[in-house]
Length: 319
Image (cartoon, rainbow, N blue to C red; front, side, top):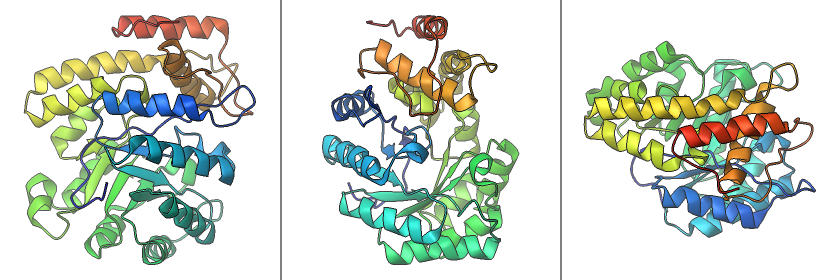
């Protein structure tokens, strides 16, 4: 599905189900795509952080993206993460993604080595010039160790390099400043960046972000309850902020499943991604809840907590 207008709505970062041997489970991934599209989402982001992209080989990345594109079958646009350390490596991922049928690309700034703003701008421009697909910047300082400035984002939006931004900085004030930099809610629609989309990755503050003027959300836990985020988005678009807040609060309670794994036993990624996959397995969407090695699996006690959160949110497990 060609992106001819600003991307808006709910665009979950699609989990990558793995089998017991650590390979991509394409059958489960296909069911997950149907689960998301059936929930009313407006797009799919394959090969993002929630997809465990950093753990996947190039072959596994290609298998996952090809599956998402094939199952989506043009019903919603598919954005492909092309995340890697250097421009040359990102360009190769982007060429592969285009060949597999992705509708747009998502890239971070270069990382591991420190980069200057001018180098980051050159990175995005080289990528956009080399592979002719809409390009979204992914601002995730916790992983990349650099923050995309509002002025840089505006510059790359105005010259057509970027089609949008996924903000996973956790900096709500910075997000608001970016929206002001881009001209605010009304000014952006009429100004020099009318086709530019701002998407929040902070699933706990979606109602507030939509009120501030973002175009949509990329929620990791949207894998589990895509319809809930669609209801939240629809309520906000209708100006029913009371209904939006009520749905946000329910989803915030559901999100507490990411704390199922105790910090003494595992990292935050293991707990969060493990809980998403565990929930999807309990709901009968995927076959196996394993995360990529060396992430630590959830304990039996943690799985009970995940099931409890599902029931409390009105999503009773079938397993």
